[in-house]
Length: 403
Ligand SMILES: Cc1ncc(COP(=O)(O)O)c(C=O)c1O
Image (cartoon, rainbow, N blue to C red; front, side, top):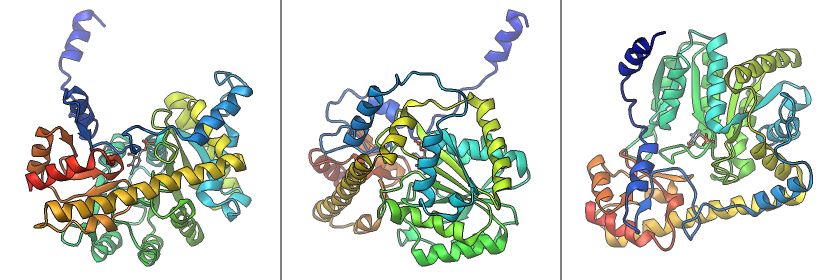
């Protein structure tokens, strides 16, 4: 190609639309106000406004340093210890799908990478399926599945009037889907609404998925931030018990506070060990043609913590600490808003689960918050896990002011 031809190729390329979440961080970083607060991005900060480095992670890293250099090159088979530890966490160590070798797990580059590997895999073997995501959903769900070549639709989920799930609407949506449709479900801590299904509602969703011949894809990015590690993972086990194909993406970004290491996994449940072996070979192919292997350090840290009883116990404590502190921030936010903005009932924020609150603030109000150097998502999503004892009053005052 001549240089003129390549120049015209590139000169025809438009600016990509701004990522709604990452764009907030860019604007936040550019803000020179020292009192700026970022409630836009989904990151847990401690009471000093810092992303915590968990003790279990520090101890696992120290242990790894005693062994091999983390940069030691291992062959492309990846980290078998990681895949096994994650599988036991996701399905439960005593799960029949592990004993029968019907579940396969591949390390992925964060939860996002797990979704992408799953999407590319499904596109190869179920190319005509439509994908359904909740209305609303994590912004990247649509983009990820569309970039894998799927048509992406919404299913009814959130009811603004009750700040809860429009469950009848959701069931009606599920029942209308064509067999073979792929339905992406948030296993816990729904992002962005913080509205989860009850155990009874999950049972009805599982029935609808089974009866409709749908392909469930559980996205579990916040295991441990809802009711607890086992409690949040219970839904995966219920889907397994119901039988049928199942994909599960999970992420350790939040639960290990390892945002930068990009540690996640994709697990797929097959109907037999022989089928599982075929699926694994295809999953590895998708990984191989994208980036060959995932990076190893984060995976080793997570595998070390999960497989070392002392560190595992420490992780569970530290994760519980984060979960409890977020609950406390919800309580404080509701109590403070009740005083500062009594005209509006924010009691629902207490009932929401996970890191986010769908606050009900309008785009205009979010825009006004930004004039106070407080950054939230245009849809009104705020990250409760970014509040702390030092910034909460400023946030409450600013919300009261914009209402
Ligand atoms: C619902 C949901 N899925 C997946 C992810 C991706 O996780 P990761 O940051 O590990 O790629 C996120 C992260 O924000 C999320 O909220």
